Length: 282
Figure 1 (cartoon, helix red, strand yellow):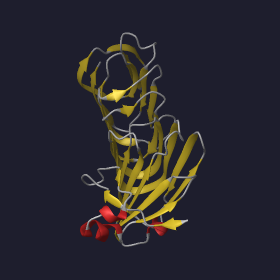
Figure 2 (cartoon, one colour):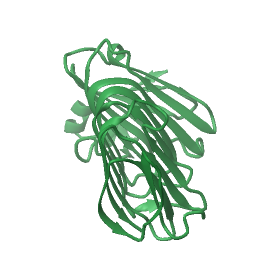
Figure 3 (tube, rainbow, N blue to C red):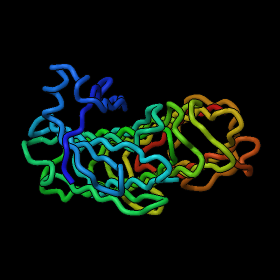
């Protein structure tokens, strides 16, 4: 089924998602009609599940999908075979957003030639974005909503990545597994996250040679959330409030909060080739 979907606003800023649909065509202004003419919507999974293809240029492709009410309890989002690009993952305080994906290419190419996005699952969805390496990806921006926990997986080569967990991002039952080479990975976890009784697990370069050269972690635990972190050496601790040295091994050091054996808890296993830099606060 193919149809035009009337949209009043789809970006608050670059990749800033504004989930406000206008259902009455008569209320759409002349300016918005011009915007609507550029927007193609089609059904991809299940009744009422809408995927928006937002064509911006031959080198810039965008996809937005709203979260179907009551459909998913969690989502696994896998980015596979990324090469020679920067990756930015962030969250917005919008429980109706499933994802907003923006891909910028080095050279002009149709979206279908650059990547393939597949969706499967019912209660828990698996979203996979496959990059085959034939079209070079300059930048990937992924914005996720605040309605459900996400299990994020990344596989790639020569990737510089930033992950920012804020804006009521769901922490309980969420996870991040990152296996990619590159100059750096920047991880930021703010106290503006939401936890219930369960924790989350973060791994970077664990059990693999696919790890970043340098890793930067800024972690400010929300109230009532505990933490345990295993960091590869050499380790530079730039600030530390409430974390203590638990044990040290030849290649790694573990720091914990006082109640690290209790949930909810953020568990981290972080490995880098050259250095790990952390800013810790409970």
